[in-house]
Amino acid sequence: DKYSGTLLINDAQNLDYESTKHYTLQVVVSDNHKNDPLEAAALINIDVTDANEYAPRINPELEDQVFFIMENTSAESILGLVEAMDEDDEQLITYSITDGNEEGIFHINPENGLFSLINGSLLDYESDSLHVVTVAVSDDHEGNPLQTTVQIQIRVLDENEYKPAIISRQFEISENPE
Image 1: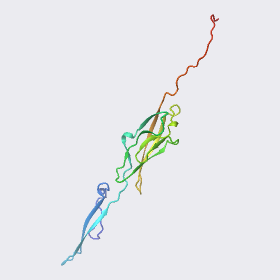
Image 2: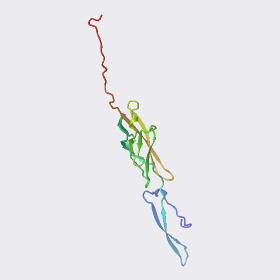
Image 3: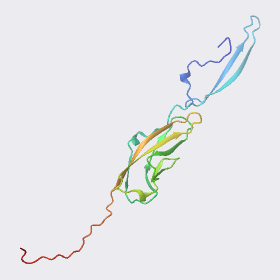
Image 4: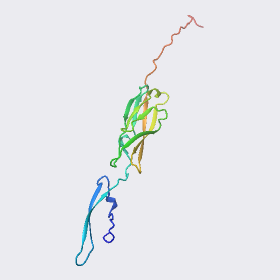
């Protein structure tokens, strides 16, 4: 404002931390004296602070993610990768399993989203051929952290575990049955 010296933002919608983090303005003030006006100039630095505008976004191809694994698979088998990104600058994202893993069968690396099996002895096609877990992806914004979730299906494939057996028996039959 030219009368009060208050700096105003003409259009706050144009402030975007991701495109411009810092502004430097030169401000000139004058006393509007008729005969001998005096003026002074100064540089004003304005730092734009980041608002957490975007929740982490999971790769759209993974929204209906299904991982397949054979029953009796050994522990620590990698099933796949949950990929996500955050459009806000300087946001670290973390991954966690928030539901559906009460038995501790699965693990997700909190830093890179690598989804793996940690307890294969609990996979049994005959008792439970489908596991559904909820994975949360969170950003680390201090004031307003945001989170996105996705459900991942793990389909257990049947392994032919049991060899057929023939039980040997002896039968007797008479020559002329009546």
